[in-house]
Length: 84
Image (cartoon, rainbow, N blue to C red; front, side):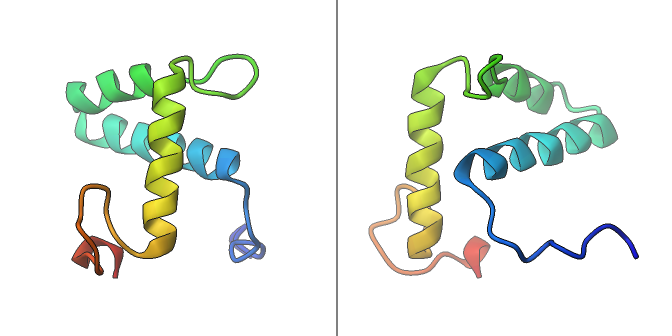
């Protein structure tokens, strides 16, 4: 087993946010991208698990809403190739 037995289980929005941070952190390490590292620092969570900047959380919730609807933030409507 590769530890992915429950990969299709629903997760919370908070867990999805943390997964995004883990993914971006790995990408920042692999690519040695200072831009990604800076972004991760900006998106860091506090001891309650929420982003330090409340505006980031609001933007995250907007992004989740757009993903659920199948489009990117800023799109007038319809599907976006990145979400296919």
